[in-house]
Image 1: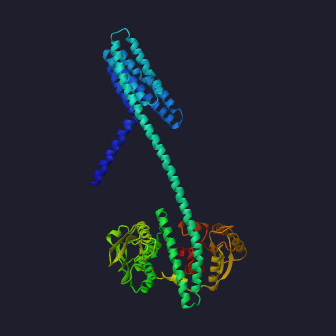
Image 2: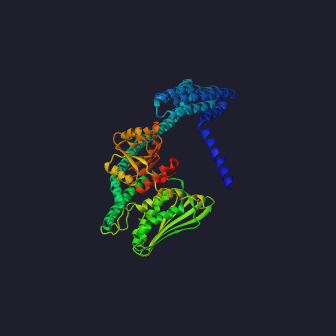
Image 3: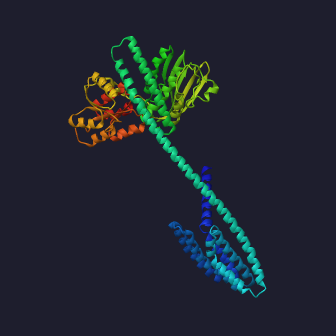
Length: 595
């Protein structure tokens, strides 16, 4: 049945295409044929055949001439077309003359019909240019005058004149109607052109506003992350010292508050990127069960500190290696677990991962986060995933937040081709369920998969490190931590100073800021890679306050090996140092996690 339907549809489409071609492209040849039949009746087949052959050849020549005139784009194309049509009209006007001269009474009737048909064809074609129409129809006018002169002393003159008047009135009405219609079309086209111009202008304004928003987000990200790097970096350094319990509590407050501010900043930037359609998803292999366990472990301490039962349940049949974007998947799980622990005061919080095998290389994954917290009423569920929406927005609300976490999570779920739903009952808790399909790289665990993580925890031999950072506080934070780790340091406040240092001594790794005076980090890395000095192949890790993927890609294009986003997490920095010590291949494999 589908094949029959397809065949029938194809046949109908072919017939419609053929019909359109014959009607539009070969209309003049249909006219030649119809005029030839009329002329054959009035003057005989021989004259009709001669005239028809000549008219067909003239039609081919005229069609090509008109096509070239239109393609030339000349400003006087209407005048050129009028000249071409006038030449054709001279040949076509012979047909009424032949019918009039050889057809007797019936021939004259056919001659007048052909004459009026010729007038109508020309006038309709140039209804918007009456001057051009009059010129193109002049051969028919000459024939009409000849008809009138041949009848001036005969009784048929007035009959002929009356027929001419009636037919001329009909033609005039048709032409005037065409002019009105053409005027309406012209006004409509002018209005469309004006609207298109306004839309293009509005689009340009919107593009400029979007570009300004992107530039503002990049700027605000840099301006906020740079001082945050100093705050959180100093907190990490303090935390590694011998502190009294009270001092350690104060440091924990600083780190927790800083992390909250950083989460808020990341949510705003993520939401802006999602709204602009600028989120690029990775498609890499990752250990799905391990990812769920690591994300779950992050929130276990928070749940236990509130006296909650906490569980992470992984399906034994889940694929060991899935293909997708582990960073975005972890972000969704973090958002769901954050809400679950925040809104649950007693009872249980659980993260579960279930898998359904669809094919040898395909699986349906279901990740659920359940709690026994406040629950959500049916009327509140409708606005649960709306951006900046909170169920309790009063000034006395107990829980903070921007209302972006769930909105971002649902958008990310849609981007990976999944669905994020919720089941909830007020007073009994909620269950958020993320369901999506993924490509499976391996169903069984790969031996030695945890080796890179273990290598990152192993002691690192002292390295010669060049720190290139224009911000004095951030530079000092990096100096203090690297010195405490036993590394040998050199510092530069911009790219040019860094290149001068690189010309005189070799380094094991270069930590390069992006935005600096005199010479920025990207230019310095390009210059370094283009040279043949001792540091031309040295590992370069970019340090940037921008979290935008396109900015990171610009660093890789310049020649960087890895990217760390400010505020710098010392664990990530230690992993980058360990990878650099292991060689270029190791840091390339760890690029994703370092970024």
